[in-house]
Length: 386
Ligand SMILES: *[C@@H]1O[C@H](CO)[C@@H](O)[C@H](O)[C@H]1NC(C)=O
Ligand SMILES: *[C@@H]1O[C@H](CO)[C@@H](O)[C@H](O)[C@H]1NC(C)=O
Ligand SMILES: *[C@@H]1O[C@H](CO)[C@@H](O)[C@H](O)[C@H]1NC(C)=O
Image (tube, rainbow, N blue to C red; front, side, top):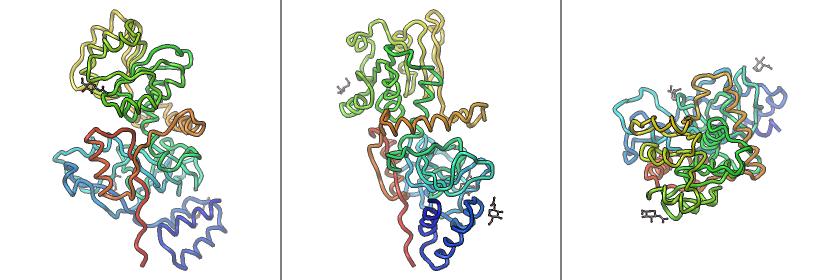
């Protein structure tokens, strides 16, 4: 199993030559061994990155680069990237500012691929495992042929999904899962209660609505266009309100005149604050995943004994919390749900190959905020054969 996989990788990386063929023969004799493996990886890889933070219309906003393979840490696995998804975090990190990097910055915090090397302390995966992963935005990401990741950021790819379908799911999946299970503390005991998801057609919203539906909650989504409303209804929402209009009369018209038990806000909470304080039931909980653009009044929390909680996907990783292994467990859980059909991928657009032109187009589509579902960019162009 491992040998043919590795041989194929060598071919892709180095291209066919008699030396490589004989290298493959040697490897088959030795055991699976990450340092031996690493020895036969290419020295450089293709990547899409940048030095300057420029508007996406600028030709230099994202560049085709040839760079060294990422440096691995002890707990890392090195993943050969098959598909990478694009998220608002990418466009936010690339947004124009005067800083100039001395070394290129490579984005991409969501993807799928194959484990090709392991750090000494990494224990979870084997060479050759097909995986999907979130990223760590302090490090270089998956807009490259290889990405080095702490193994807790990685889960086994659901077998029945393609690399592209799988690549669309980790970042939004973990965020939605943590929001519902770890922050709002929802479980099957909440069946029959109501959850309002503000902006339910986006990446996180369309996973959260599926997860909540599976727990038996009544899911009230919001979206403003016919297409996004339909997408949300197809991904777990029972009803979808129009968030460009006042939500209160729409909730009343749909039988929620007494309010909702939970709210998940996948958008700037500031413009919704007063509405939320009105429609949340006493002892209700609200989870925020986007920064508030303004200061909000906490006074209304008191009489209703409300809970406000926040979700950021990398908290466990950045603060190295005692339960950081849970990040991996959640990915495994999402993988199972995708495998057994409890969750469906929110992939709607695939672009190929992974290069600066396509990554710029993907960033542009995201910045326009007209995307429905997720964009995945897949496969590097074969190197020209000499
Ligand atoms: C792995 O391979 C390297 C280089 O071939 C060798 O030095 C090392 O002893 C091997 N380690 C194991 C655990 O087999
Ligand atoms: C990202 O990759 C570039 C190219 O190899 C490298 O120079 C840079 O140091 C890396 N950045 C980080 C944060 O590892
Ligand atoms: C949502 O409301 C806005 C503002 O009234 C309106 O322009 C839009 O057509 C509505 N969307 C749908 C799907 O009805």
